[in-house]
Amino acid sequence: MGNTAVSRRPPVFGCRTDAYSRARLVADGSYTSRRQATPPTLPTLTKTSITPVSIAYAIASIIPRIFPTTAPPKEPLVLDLTQPPSHPLVAASILSADFGTMADECRDVLDKGADLLHIDVMDGHFVGNLTMGQDMIAGIRRHCPDACLDVHLMVERPEDYIGSFAKAGANVFSFHLEVCHDGGRTTRPTAESIAKQVRDSGMLAGMVINPPTRPDALGPLLDAGLLDLALVMSVNPGRSGQSFMPEVLEKTRWLRDRAPASTRVEMDGGVNLNTVDQAVAAGADVLVTASALFGSDDRRAVIEAMQNARR
Image (tube, rainbow, N blue to C red; front, side, top):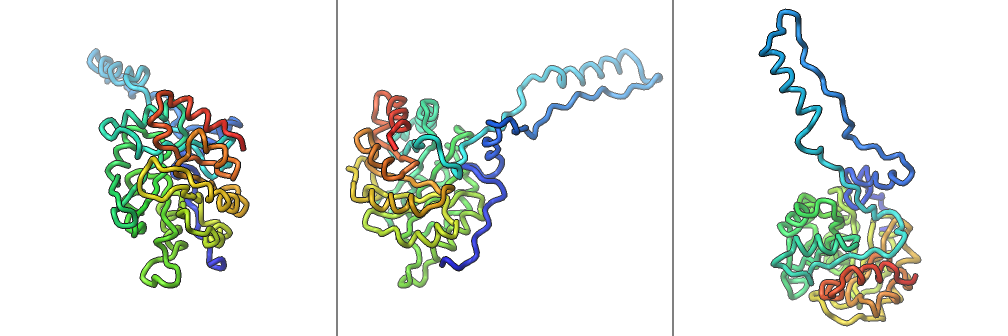
C-alpha cells in the first residue's frame, strides 16, 4: 500500500477546502478578500439626453451603489486543520445536544469557544444505533456557515455517502478501518481508495479505529500522506456517555509519533475534565466531548479547561 501513488490534495487546504484556508494569511497581513470594492459608475449622459427625467433616473440608479441597503456578504475565515494547533481543539459532539433545538445548541457551543462540531452518523448495522445523516449536516451548515463540520461515519459502506456528504457541507469525512478490505473481505474497497475518494470530493479524509483495533494498518496511509485525521475511539462506538478506556492511550502515542505534522490525532469517547489531560499528554490534539460539554451548566468553562489541558 505504501508504494501506491499519493492522492492529490484539493488545491486549497483547510477545514472547508474551497476558499477558507486563506485564514492562515491573516496573521501576516497578506490576506485580501476577493470581493474588492469598485467605485460606482455613473450613467452616461449626452447633451441631448439631459432632461429632468434622465437626471432623476441617474440619481436613482447611483444612490443604492453609494449607500447600499445591505452589507456585502462576508467571506468566513475558518479553522485550518492541516496546521498544528496552538492548543487542543475541542470538537463538540452534537449527539448529546438537544435535538429539538439543534441549531441553537450548535451556535451556543461555538459562541462559547468550541473549535469544531462533531457529527456522529450511525447506520444501525456497523453499530446498533441510528442517528443523523445528510439533512442534519445541511441544516447545520445553513445555520452555522462558518463552522467546521467533523463527520464521523459509523457505517458499513462509507463510500456510498462521500458525494452527498460533501454536497451537504461536511468538512471532515472520517470512516472506520474495520469496514475496509483487509485481505479477507474481498468485496470491500481498500482504505486507501476510500481516502482518495474523500480527498477528491474536497473534504479532508479521516480514519477511525475502535479500541481493540491495532493502529499498524494506518501506518502506510500516514506515510503516503493520505490521512488528514486519525481518530482513536476511547469507548466502543454507538452511544455517548460511556467511560474512558485508558488502554487506548498507547496507540494514541504511536499515531502521534508516526503521523506527519499536517495530520490531526483525535480522541473520541469519555473525554471529560477528568480524562482530558491523559488524552492530550498521549498526543491527541482534537478532543471530542459530548455529555461532559452539553450536560454542563457552564459550557464555556468546560471548553476553556480542555483547550488549556497540559500537553
